[in-house]
Length: 210
Image (cartoon, rainbow, N blue to C red; front, side, top):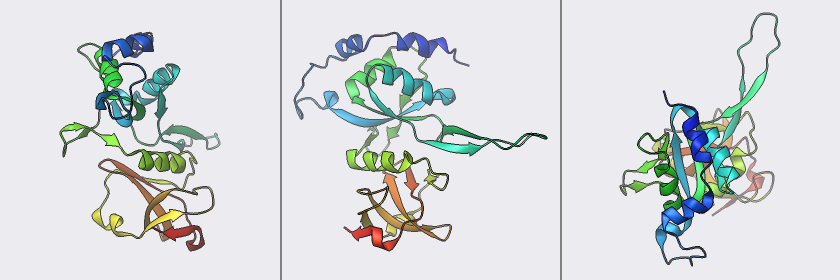
């Protein structure tokens, strides 16, 4: 098993050093160099180290996101039931950074890498999450409601729902498909190629067709 100090040692690497290793010029204009454009990438952290990856990158000023859920802990005799906040999807951490900087970050671990990209096999390249879908996913996931449903194996039928935008309420502005799960109308926000989250119950008056 990998030692914890692998991640801790990497966390000591200054972000300026990573920027130098990546070869990215600071203040790069949009469209000039694709590898230096900020995008949302999905990273896989081995041995469920997603929170360590999130925290060490956040310390460098990198925007990250790990969807979290409340999980009910097993009840022991003589104890009251408790809940614990845990990652909704094991080993997954989203990072808003340049590909060049992420490449440098991964290289900083040497031969044994406790973190790597989720891969888009259709493009034979690291999976890039569209900005709008990611922001909507964050909006829904950040509510951390126990009724949220995460889906990693999205059946084609779920994608056939009406495309809508939420016009009011806590999920205002998000876009997705109307689905019915557990006899409840919800909005499915999909990150293409990897995962989706379904909101809590939502009324027709809160929706507009797009």
